[in-house]
Amino acid sequence: MEEIILEVQPRGELGKNKVKDLREKGFIPAVIYAEGKKSQPIKVSHRQLWQLIHQHRLESKVINLKMQDDKKQKGMSCLIKEIQHDPVKGDIIHVDFNEISLTKVIKVNVSVVAKGEPIGVKQEGGSLEHILWEIEVECLPTDIPKDIEVDVSLLKIGDDIHIKDIAFPSNIKVMNNPEAIVFSVTAPIKEEVVAPAVEGEEKQEPEVIKEKKEVPAEGEEEKPEKEKK
Image 1: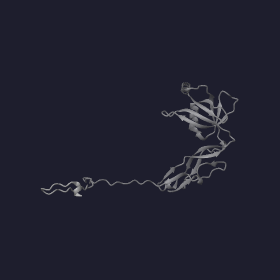
Image 2: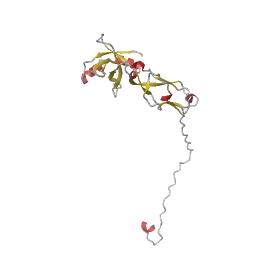
Image 3: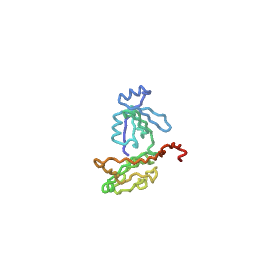
Image 4: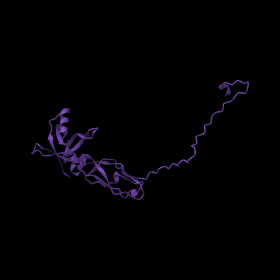
């Protein structure tokens, strides 16, 4: 398992105004949750967290949180529970961590990656549809795969790859429906060609047939509608 270390600090700044000041100083407020323990407020360097996000897919990675002010304390193995973003700017405004045991199985979502170019795309002009982007697995934290790589090079138009078609390591249990489609190659979309109008030709309007109205003879009064019928 690749070790990812993130240095954090205990956080005493609580409340809306203090948290705002904390962000202006380059920190992100966060909380560590653990089963049977009291939640622990911490703060994380915005710069360091962004560096890790660009280097790794942190949602399915075990992160070793280390307190900067306590050199004796061992790192805490955690998974990211939630990352909250500002709805307008998109900046990270809060992070929740879950402390985990490295000897207890957990459920995580692992990203799916396509390998190769399908025959149906390269030779037949089709399109590769990536339908399922993540697969939920159950395993020990030390056995979480970096990603799930799927060879799609033999797919032709109309072919699918289901979860049951993918070979997984024996130490990983897949939680998704085995019949779920992960990749599919579809035929190219044919565009309907509309014939151009001939210059000078007027567009014909549909003929409207109107009911003929009976004209009474000279000296004869027009009958009411009911009598006509």
